[in-house]
Length: 396
Image (cartoon, rainbow, N blue to C red; front, side, top):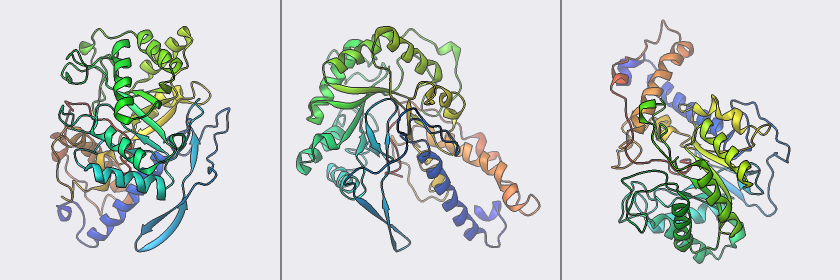
């Protein structure tokens, strides 16, 4: 209980203030990187050769956000994504719950609110959605988006539509016609895009991303590389060649990466240069106050001075852990959700370790005893099914 961790006097009020401050910090930290090409981390923006200043698009609508019963007018900002010509809203709408945790009607209503009221022009889906991955629900998210685009009569060029092709998984046997597991092979990439275009009822995709790599990498919460788990994988050149052909065919405009490492990113860039294919323009990785691996190597790779690859930061609230809703029992675990997959427990452990470091500095080590490490020892989780997805600003 909080009374065991903190001084009884004013503890509840202080925890509320701390929670609000950390959520604000997490969002601010994430927004400094989200969809910039690429802003530096921790308040040190890096300028690219092009026009990288946030700007308002003509006719962009102002949003009105309710905070503590007050209506605060604000306006969406827009940024150029990497080396592409895509100009995207600073907030991208994630979609992975539509068709599972949210109904189709709720998904359509969220899209209307995002595009009509909030000035968002960027949404992210995947062939795998909704989460959790199930054969009977796969594709519902795309069909929700298709329904909204049809009913809203929105011009196609007013929507920046991103989707993702599944990475390597022997267990995902319902995605391909041959009944085999998913791979990032040439044929499977082409098949995936054709199926996505049909579900989305559109002629082209603005941004196609590789959801997770074909080769072994630590995924979805894990952050330690294990050499013993390395395996044969689809060559980088084959994956890039598929992207190049899809661009030539007009089925996609640009391509990007997701849940990728510095090594993988540079190998993709190298392969694109060798084959004469446009390089990846974005990378969608988890980034928050608790998950900050991007800062150690990928920031240098993605810098405008180097490869100029824009970061799409997903899970800025660390799967909701930074809101403390799990600590306070305000949210129930949903089977197949981020907590069910083991990622929440890992980020919760990081959150508690952060408390260990920060708390004495805030309140003084003589007045605020440190919380026990006992709860951290059991907070080691590892995901089984892929759990990526788009920015969780909306759902959390």
